[in-house]
Length: 442
Image 1: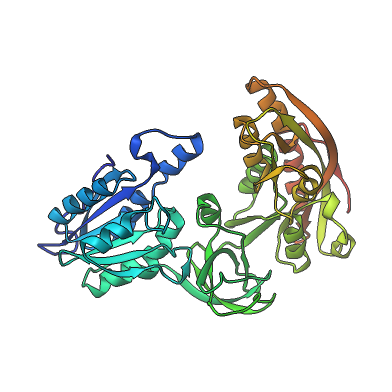
Image 2: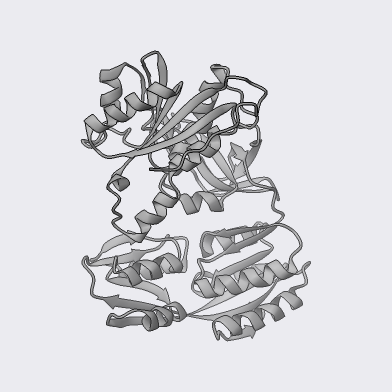
């Protein structure tokens, strides 16, 4: 069972605050985990996210039990939760699949008011009245659950006189121009995580699905795209943006990096840059676009995707960093290959070497390394230094299919102390990767 948390009765000066219970529903109810990834997901359980959000209100929140895919057990869990609480939240099991039983239980136990919202993420949402008490069903994906809490559940509780000192008031509402095309989900209002950039008031929505907790945590805003728009919102169009992160003035736009190169870059910039840094790791094509618009203070671009850099010579100093990419194979239960976004050099390499194999989407070489180490893919495109590291760690036979030599162009705005930044990067890169840096105008 998950631990219980409560708010003291007098936190808001009320003698009798409402009591809320959350019941989590899902595959981990049997105490077994299919993989480290599922274990990590459970550690980021939406039950804890929901409880921490609701605790901002004048309520006592009790995080209850995990219930398996069994209708009788769900009915019994609902009965126990209704006995001691005013409002009940079910988390997970709210879709329409054969094993998603919560809506069936609510339909037979009371009056089902809401089955599905026209929003993304968060469509599989429920609301019902059972024994004259409100029961809300949240999606099992953490980001979906959070979006429904902000857009639906917390405003509904406020209508029921539950006071929230902080609900959506922390959001800063602005209009900003799109840096890339954006498309709402068909028939649904879409809340797409994005990077909001103060310089020029731009916003960069990311490719996103509701299970991508890490992707959500890396952004600082949400773009609101209304349902009913056919096709794409074009580049430059003004859209409504909710900014939930702090304003970050120093912009780093980057190719997807290996863990060691990323560590070197972050260590150097954190030691030199005094402003708050927004790190936009979305691939070379995005980094090049932000450099051309004079938005990026530092841009890291693959040499294989660096056409047209000459036009930036009047604004940026540059150095080149050698990078070797390897395509490797191992025995695995499934013939699958790591497929990267097309905005990155890794995506170009994936197009060539993943043909004929099942494709497993990844964003960074760090994620691809983890999948290859665990045996979830048989072929992967990795940085050579990370491949060497895992070859020393694990016992499996692997084969190098191809080696690709690349160079990363690191661009630094001329109004910065580029000489110091490049000098520190030279030292840091050599210490963590042994990479060779060639000071050079690109």
